[in-house]
Image 1: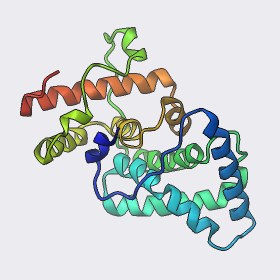
Image 2 (image 1 turned 30 degrees about the horizontal axis):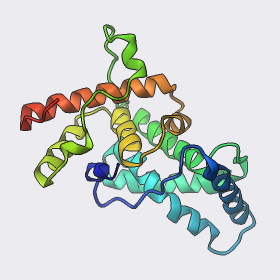
Image 3 (image 1 turned 90 degrees about the vertical axis):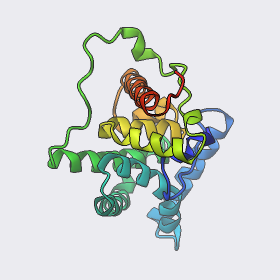
Image 4 (image 1 turned 90 degrees about the horizontal axis):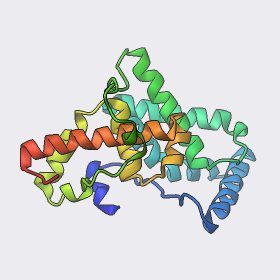
Length: 215
């Protein structure tokens, strides 16, 4: 889904990790090896970890807080916490998911301290079927076919609450599977699908009003 790249610019690149399949166990072995190297104090190992996951942390925190100075400070805080608590990583989940969880928790606490709502209230009349449906036939990536439409899409995303901005970024930009996002955020998969659906519906309405994007 490379068409999703216009959703965020000037961000460090995020590494993609396959959801499942033959490469997953290899990835887990690489995760455990990197963690072991960091814990053993191997030269350059923690710097390698930061380089590998700084893009992911930036996307999560920046989408949550939207303040450059706060984002930089919270990214630093995230990796300080990662270094401090890395010994707790057991390798039964991806290192990407574990670090993403730390970043999400740091950003969430920051917003809570500032009393900024994380999400909008759910529509009580929303049909239960929406909870299990991410696809709504709206081509989000296709809506950003040129610079002007990408700008409108970016502005529309900025109108979303922090949690929905973040979930949309993780799913469409970082191309993470729902299960991985659930690990990072602690949200149920059905809840994530509901947020994604309602976010896309709102974006479609905004873009249709501004640009006449077809539903």
